[in-house]
Image 1: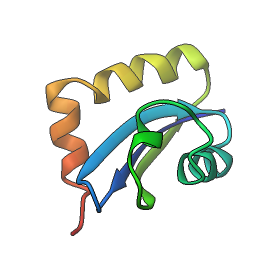
Image 2: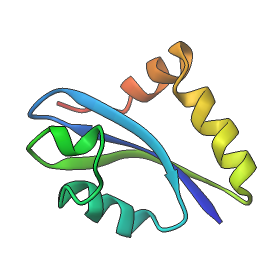
Image 3: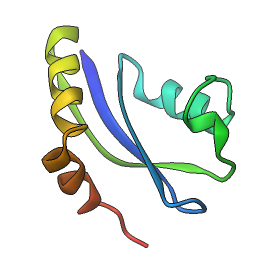
Length: 82
């Protein structure tokens, strides 16, 4: 089982879309700034705003790519509650 997820940082108004096998662990790593990359550049808490699950990594990568498109990002924005 794989999860495609979107997290949001209210302090900076930033969104991140990714995929993982263990959603709780990945969210914790984003908030501890253990993962070097985009999310570690921003202080503040990353909150889960959207997730869905698929059975294979190939499906997860395909769906992640869809959510990172213009229409996908518009869909994700609808879940942000400020």
